[in-house]
Image (cartoon, rainbow, N blue to C red; front, side):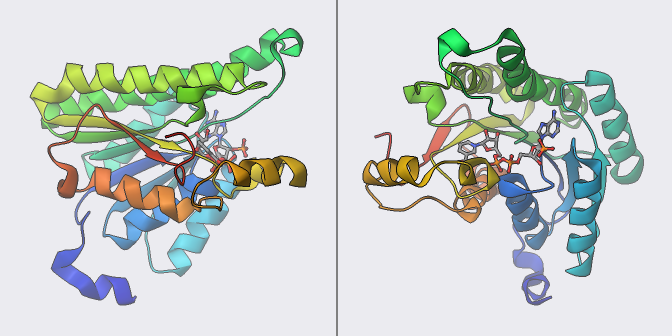
Length: 255
Ligand code: NAP
């Protein structure tokens, strides 16, 4: 593989990185970007079949990755996965909390089930994985946690109260984790994407997409690679003096 020829220049050489929700979309792109930079990558997704398929695709590209079918809302499943990661690698260096869902509706029509589902996956899932890896990172006295938030967690959106609240919660959680663990060599930052071309946004009608494009100064939706590049920066030593921050990747939409 051409990127492996960069040898010593690989930014994540010898790092073990767990990316949640990485069977597809933004998470998959982050996993691939990290693998290309030399990380040992762990794919984790609620969709076991797709996670295994993604693992096969990565193997075909020359990357030996682990894959797990895990629901991040279930702490015991996360712990079980982490123990297997530790059996193989003995350490965990990077966690990207990317798994996320949306269940949109206006407040008067928003069901308790949809409120709970979104808060559970997006916010509690982030807490569960952070709690599990922090035990190991605190012992290592090093670690790097990256949380995928959203600009909706900063500016809100009609029909997305549950999603916005979960993502605002992630931004606050990021700052607390950063403050709690900074003295132990662990950094924690968030990335807040705007509208990125994935299956999540493919469901938007052409009308809505057109309206969105008019609000984006750079005039286009973002790509998963735009988000993955910022995650790589945060995961690498290039950002070693940055913690507790939320970096917006939105083509200028929310400024
Ligand atoms: P996506 O294509 O839907 O991918 C998310 C992945 O997470 C899916 O494979 C999904 O599996 C998995 N997942 C869902 N619930 C899970 C759980 N309980 N445990 C483990 N994995 C779970 O979404 P995406 O667009 O790549 O978004 C990735 C992240 O970026 C999310 O946190 C999202 O909120 C955030 N984000 C996206 C955009 C955007 O424009 N796309 C903008 C801002 C922020 P299933 O398919 O089986 O549910």
